[in-house]
Length: 181
Image (cartoon, rainbow, N blue to C red; front, side):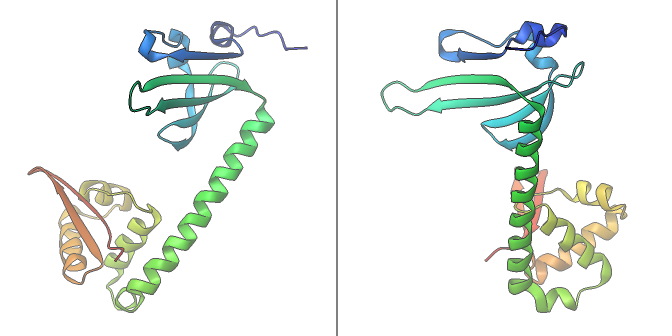
């Protein structure tokens, strides 16, 4: 027997919903009220009602049929123990991925990293912890609390040493990450 829902958001959302975006269908407006709890990938996340804490498993599906691709979305209400298990498993997966990545970085750049000044080591550790994300110098400065001029100098040094790569998107949009090959 299903629980009776007294929350206005969850009442509006129901237990589950499948929509075909190609047919002009959409989620109820209340769906926008849900808070992101865990992002799994571009097509899957876990959300929670801010009023009552009910969890919703959301998936976006693109069927890339060459003749008629379709775009659909679906969510379903899930019990909190299932949501908590999903979050634990995703965090464990990400920690294992970070562990392997740190090992790869140490293997590739370990000798150089050991000889770096402390500020450069902090930047490499920060970028390594972000896995494969590309990060701006402004974000590095903000997150690490290091003066922007010091960050710029350290990044230039790390680029010269072959530890960090720079990616430019247009004239102003620059991102950095640890070189992987």
